[in-house]
Image 1 (cartoon, rainbow, N blue to C red):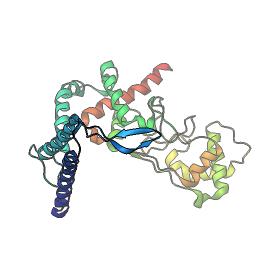
Image 2: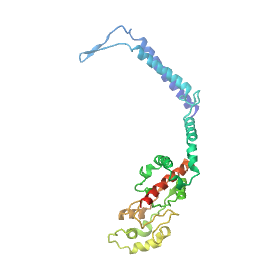
Image 3: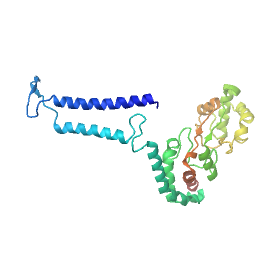
Image 4: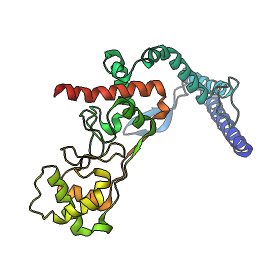
Amino acid sequence: MSNFWSGYIIVLTLTMIGLILWLLIATRKGQRPEETEETVGHSFDGIEEYDNPLPRWWFMLFMVTIVFAGLYLILYPGMGKFPGILGWTKEGQYDDEVTAAREQYAPIFAKYAGMTVEQVSQDESALRIGQRLYAINCSVCHGSDARGAYGFPNLTDNDWIWGGQPEQIKTTLYQGRQAAMPAWLAIIGDDGVRSTAAYVRQMAGIETDGVDTTLGEKVFNTNCVACHGPQGKGNELIGSPNLTDDVWLYGSSMLQIQQTLRYGRNGNMPAQAHLGDDKIHMLAAYVYSLSRRDVAAK
């Protein structure tokens, strides 16, 4: 903030407080004694209104608020660049609270830091911590039940685009993930899009609605096998999904698959490295436990 604007705010603030104080005192002096009762000189629907002075307790309450405002502006920042004699800042308060939280919870995180993700995923106390971390950082995309939504993966099954082993999950959390499904319309045309969509549905065992898949098979073997493999099983190393199961991130209808082929997909999983090693370790264990439950259920 420049000195000009700092000075402008200080002058404006003090002027407003001074005007309010003057208004209170001036109107107080101009009022009649409280013992005198007079009306404003006319009535409203037959009801006359008294012209009485402001009650003394109310006047004093206003004065207290003005004194409080003055003391506050001396102690805390509020007038331009003047920091207040206490030196308080919101950044400083935040840092103090973070430091206190770290001191309080560091021993808890340290207890689990020496354990593997698999071991942590079997500890109920650790999972409760992980669940809270998930609710704060992940539920907005993957849902409070972790079952995902359109364009956001389900974390409770055993189908993983980038791999569901502990280290793979931690890598996802640290680095984030960026999808790179290119658009194919300009290359294979509308006929190619329609036929390839039908062929992909056929690979997953879905009815093709009588669409000829000959061209689609040729397009797939020419352009898609590099990422999805000749059998369409996908590749976790590059994040290409398995096209032969019943898990579809963007839907399995003809229209939805054609949309994917025409315009591509560029989903983004943001990196969570800012959480720190301890929290990522706990969060990875919680997410890992979700898919393990699915395996156990089967």
